[in-house]
Image (cartoon, rainbow, N blue to C red; front, side, top):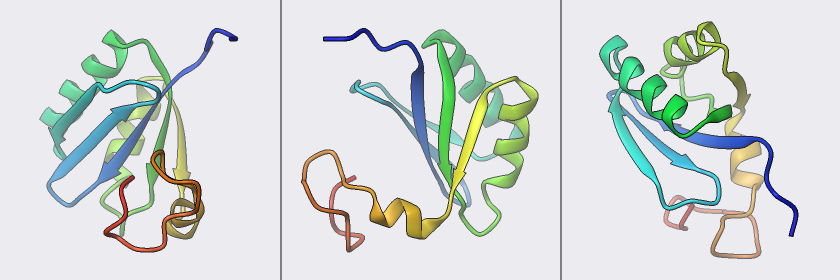
Length: 103
């Protein structure tokens, strides 16, 4: 099996919280969606050697954290909600169609 070169993280953005997961890992982080929370997030991402971050556009709640991550030299990919809904979840073979399906 090929060794993964780029470590990626995904962020689910809410008005008050950021829920973060590492690709291929059970590691999780929940941080405040505030400048202090961004510091915690950046330190956590750096500790895990993350290079690329995916985040869903979330009514503007993602903008400040995206700007901070880019300032910190992370590659940030902003997905539109329709793109995220079309992605298969990790525990099923079909795209997610409802909010109740696992991510």
